[in-house]
Length: 278
View 1 (cartoon, rainbow, N blue to C red):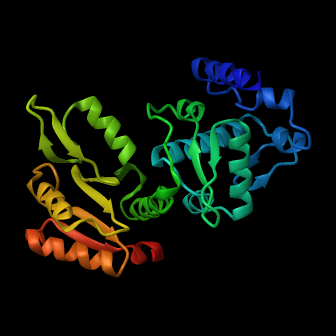
View 2: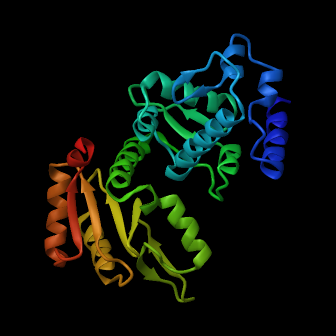
């Protein structure tokens, strides 16, 4: 019943007005022990002890929609990524996420012991963010890659601006809609003429140019890696490709492959440790 009420409430919210608060029903039917938090709201300055005015509510909802939208675009992130993205303290970030989880807009995804809990947007959260994406599929073996991609996304946003960065999820959606490569490499073609694409983890769209970002945490088979690099080098719609790799064996393997395909002019290597320090 509670999930159905949430769906009806959000459907009405999307269809009618941006002035309707997503926690109206939660204020009427509060969870035990959370009445003050849900009624007062949680903003970037922490829990409020008074009822916010219309402008405060609108500002809070705008920020919350931005958070849900960013998480939905990235697929899966950690609490620390949200904290860094919006420049808030850990306690404020935790309160923001708790509010959005209570509203059914995002959910926590448990991972293996010792790994950070991931956050992803729910079906309702993705609709609330006005996106056409699907709910991200997460398995324990992908945790490190999700976290690294979010790190690189924050670094890229800081360097080129938030509007210049697309996730693999957004790129897939855009290419399915356009029916042609936008930021992907064509790796094969079927007899029917349909192209088999390899999509990067992130895509920079800076000054009209497309710059894919490949986040490589482990060493690929040399022949496969070189084949992908040759495909990138043949892609005329791509300016260059950034390979973000951890220092060590993976970096050495990527640099060897670049040498083999003579892709120094189109393929660039950046250490993941440099991204983390930025």
